[in-house]
Image 1: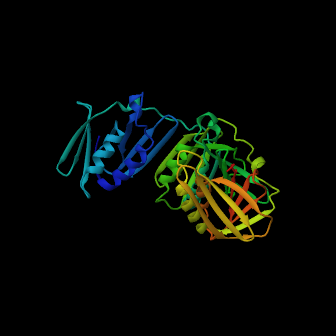
Image 2: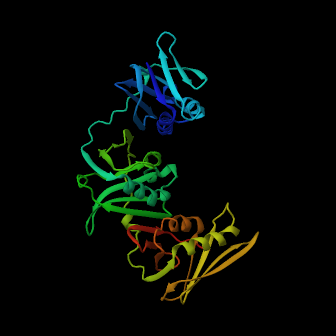
Image 3: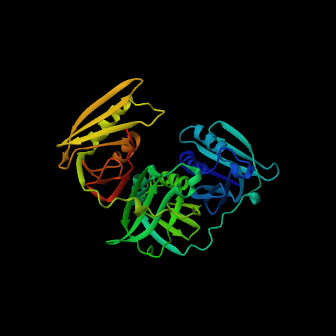
Length: 372
């Protein structure tokens, strides 16, 4: 195997695939990236047995072939080569080593046989549809902050996607950790009506978001009830799905909240951030909201360091209410608001609160209160 490729293109592709590779592996081959060249193309493959990424890029190929090389080490080498350098990579069968040349630098890396590299079979993926890259990025950004990190409730460790048809057919994404819930909807893509409810793991969501950062056009999605594949811009990301049942999230979305609070989202976020400065980072970071007559008072009390108070003007026409929230959770939600105004639908100090972005009806958030 022998080929030459421009450094920046190789570095970008290696940065994509090496993200899937775990830093610590008990199986040595999983620390490597599979490199294969033929027909003027370099194909890079990496996997952790749950997720697989394949990326194709153009290269000047002098000899077809393939091998595997340490993913993180190869990425670091290419990253540190001079800008604009042409990288020449050669694998010699007689010494079974990878030779990397760039500028005046020369590296020789130990390899493992490509025949040992595991192949992740996607199997039959009967449901197929496409979503614009910008729409997929938006869905992820609006929901992933609420993914649970609690491993015992593994079925909450991802985003739940399913087809729904309340008023109109939509592709709905939901994430929750039991304290807050985020839901976002897109018009149902053609071909997605028969999709099963699936839970896409947190790691796959993170990798997908990085990959579509610079992407444009459509992301082709194919899935079954156990696997999902995303394909775009010469990249194929395949992942196992979380084998579990996502809870009935509709049960925690309040229906009878009758106290409407309308406020300026960014002003509110800044105020929460300021008063929460005095709270104890290791404890609850609770902020108390006193709402009465178009006025809100935000209060944080820390017995060890003092207290903070800030007043905001709001639109509120119901009976006075005092309710507490985790400041971090409030900030997570308000940071997702694109419009100037947000609507909080409240009931009482012990009931979940509904939050809406008044300029994006596709987004909905639920936040559990806390005692303060």
